[in-house]
Length: 419
Image (cartoon, rainbow, N blue to C red; front, side, top):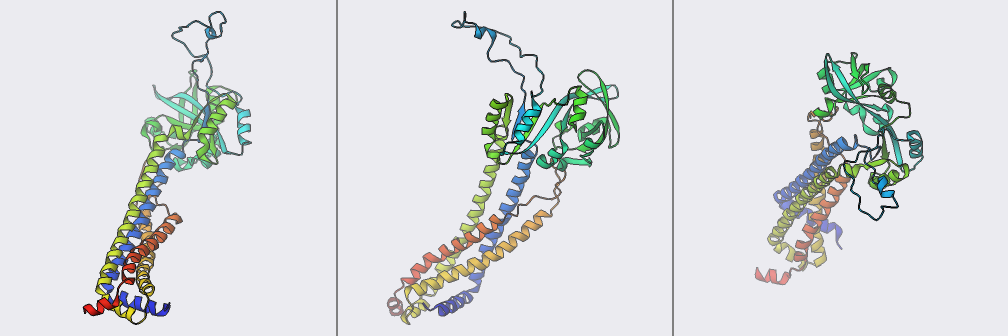
């Protein structure tokens, strides 16, 4: 094969129709740039929205659900075991909401290789005292270090330092709605009333904004020890154990296993947020479909341009074949033209796409759902650039392959005789 000569002929044909070549290259560049920008933005947005759920929701949650016992004393009776029993207005047993043997359960969870982290929680119903008015509220006692590491707690802090609830005695981080209702600021002392009617004074060391106004009006956070003190319970009293797994996909299976093993109720993140997970998958699918469609459209543009070029260059093709070029040589000329457009246009598209992502990444974006996010989210995943690069080469190769086959079958005798 005459490689150098094939390259020279390909170059000459490209430059001879440089306007069409430029249009084809721009089409590829535009498609690649839009593919990168669309995928980067959509998946960045998906990551942000997913974070609103995964940052706040444990993969598995253990808790004690107070419910009616499924097996009643009448069911255990030998005398009436074959009869139908109708018992109405059943009531649950008088039980506390704490998890039995919580310390032992936490030790067992920490020893499980599937578990990434365990965070205890104590939930307490309280009233916030605003003068003579009492406002409903909830104080969650948390392990701040664990919440920061596994649930991005600091991302929702709008004032103060979260670690202060561990270091400052009788301290609290209030929701922004609570702070507004109580007209409280960092450093102020607020009063809360517990379920026994006792009034406790707490120092505000921070403010938290979840982005959900109804929650921010009632939710506050304190250390586990402070919340246990508010409830007047012992140090092993826990209402929830939040578990992060190394592999989130096994959460449903692990939740069922823990429920049977520890004798508690258990919920998993997939069951709790099934509709959100479905929405995220659909958004990703739509972005990939639109991006790939753009690349295919660019490929058809190159195909049409090369088809026209072949019809216009029938004389040149006939001369090449008459002077000793094989059909394969002629085919390689047009494939090389297509690949040149694809590679150069694709490379330029990758650069433009990265630049557009940077522009979007610096556009101000203000959302109450995540106070620390100040610009639009962008995912700079390398996989998008690899997919776009491969697809641009493959698409342009196919766009050049089919016209090149037609060119390789041209009969020079018929073309010359027709002239």
